[in-house]
Image (cartoon, rainbow, N blue to C red; front, side, top):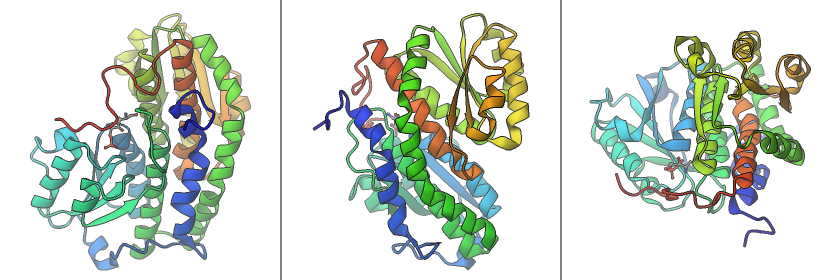
Length: 365
Ligand code: M6R
């Protein structure tokens, strides 16, 4: 059942190109995003006061990445809320609010309760769900399924990737309806989107390098992930993946925030995973890398092919991913981080598919 892999997590990481294809390709027809089940109109979308993304854990991290992209595409405010906080913060939701609810299982109780509250306050609910017929899917006004297939490992990988993919589709679909995207840009994103599965395959083929880095760093007591903009959102996911299955203390930081506190924790032997794939902020990120290096940190860098050689001059080791449209970077960047978490946990002899204290679907508050 594990398809020859030692763990479901490894199998599910390797299934990502296919899961991405299944989720995205049938929804692109003649160069356009077609979401047959949805019927949003331009007037409704233009009238929105905001989009409120509601989710937990990794699904929340998808929301964090989606916020950058959706705001860029739609020029509407996007708020991202942890479902467990949403109900208790007197959220500002009106009939002009669209709630985007993201959940693999469709049964996470915090997310479900937050969704019901958003509905009660008048929001229309669009959910992104993997499990067909789950409670969240049934109670939403609209649902877009991720076609990741069953995900068994507690640590999500292919569900996260397909959720991200669906947020791109939603962004393009809405931007097209609202007229907030130029045709050239739209076409450029679509053609890059179609290349993602092949690029994912090339990253997976190079997984031995990541296994090697894991063998160097698996005993580090503390690991920081730093990034700016969309790289910061990816860092959050990389950090959660690592701590969830390897039990190493880890934090994700917006790189520019380091000097407001966290840099005091950097000392010789701390590992910093520096995410520098977002090219407009590459130089800025590199200046943060210099800061942590000068305090003795080991730095594992992640950049796109275009910037890999430049990054390698400053960091200890560099992982590269193929270049793509900046909005799609999370899809590529997350894979080396999933692999890193997996191989670190493997080295440490952890129970990878069933980490201690965790359940696949959290149905208690
Ligand atoms: O099923 P959901 O997407 O609603 O689950 C949300 C979180 O519990 C989930 O993403 C969790 O954080 C994962 N175990 C992380 O790998």
